[in-house]
Image 1 (spheres, helix red, strand yellow):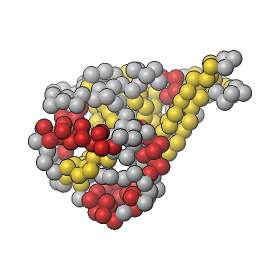
Image 2 (cartoon, one colour):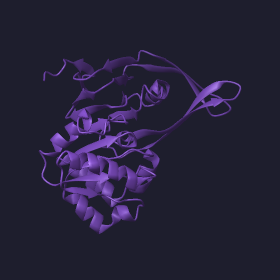
Image 3 (tube, helix red, strand yellow):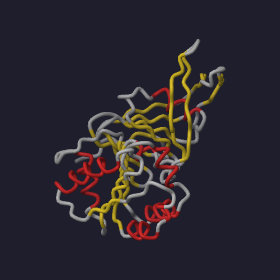
Image 4 (cartoon, one colour):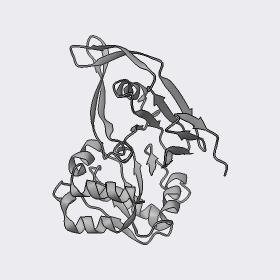
Length: 264
């Protein structure tokens, strides 16, 4: 599973999409593009098809799902059943969940992933990988600044992870640590743009230009929780762990420790 923080380089020398295509070569079957999250699916699909075709990919299937009815369509299910890999584009993760979660397509994707389907996702397509996900956050500016966060359900491929994207570029540390404070059995993963994690088994490797942040609240405590009249939240927490990783470093999700840089 390749989970991308968004805004990845879409060119022939782009490291992250090149890694996805190299991994795809190890699978039999077409590469699927799922643009459901996007409000401009045709434009988004065209961009990725150009990148993939420029790197020699000939067998590409567009999975056109913009409703729950289509997510139960036998023809679409048949196409997906023959894929070797799937790329989920960015957009709106709530739209993606609303259209696909708890449909026949969702069940098929879970089963195929457990059987070896390679899945890549960027931006909203990254956030959707977890069981729990952040849908939306907003800083309320009334009498006091308060952070309001809305949570939702993802596809549940990686149930241990709560994934956020565009992380440093959009200053999302506050919302992720707040979400982990309320779900401290999960590992918070904040992925910068043009950066990704390659998850294999119980560990991941960082690929790309910037950083990946891991927020571990397993042994931490939520000391106090205050909700304002406007619905915002303020937390007092203690004993949370923060890890920051760059390209080539690995993290073990069981021990929750950084591992040595992977040798080229």
